[in-house]
Length: 371
Image 1: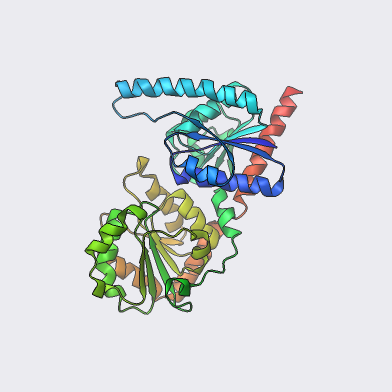
Image 2: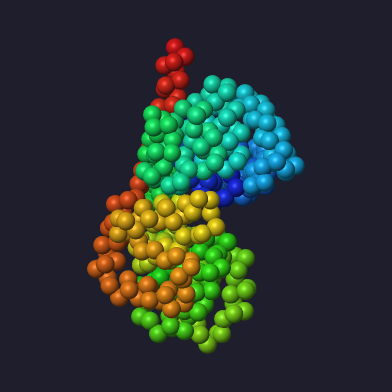
């Protein structure tokens, strides 16, 4: 198979795309893959490290003030990117083009649809993003990770697949030990993680909670985010950090660490929830209020209503509330076990294979129509 994949801007778009690529390469080692991303997003650095072919387009998103020079430039760059995408696609001649979100995928998938190439988009969130909403009328198939997204698309195109990242994480065999971080391997461990950039309010609450954590029977690994570590450490009195607490800027081997976690406290991004449910980890979710259409809260509620997680709003979050909610679960192992089972029930550990099957179906449908 020859596949073009496009997704950009954030890890939430990039990592599902790479998980799909990994599944395709596992199934077909001879597969040819081209990743088309944006010049400004995170994707170039992440994708090229994987040894994949990469093409970059200059593109940007719209701003709220509709009639502005910036938005006129946005339209110009989009049309230019569509033309460039058509050139790239004619040269590469893919069997299928897959978009995982971000503005760049809008240009690439639109170009592919206009060229009559089989097209598939994947929506990771419960609330559909602008790009995928735009593309939904042009593409052949739409894969979703939350059932809540189904009604926001043309119903005849939608297939539930889950998030490919879930399969990638579920297949990791971990030899990680907490002793590698200077902690105890047999002690239940709470991971506090606000994403790669960190979450300011979650960090502030965690700093306030440090004296209380020091007295607990469980361990805490507090990940601040790379750009926030120095600020956090300046706020922390060294005497407040117990031997059962480790503060880190980032964890590079998260898929190896997660299976060893008893409870996770974090955001409700689509990739995080795919990982949590694939592995069956109880969670306290603090959705970011700064995302489009408050979609993280809606993501989180899909776990909360199935008793796989509990919700803490950023507005209510404090050091005291954080400790109270963590204690509630860490002092109740049967409840944690039930939450873990409920989370696992929501996980889709063959999501990448399901998405590949959708790609196969899109190709087959084109072949039938062309014959």
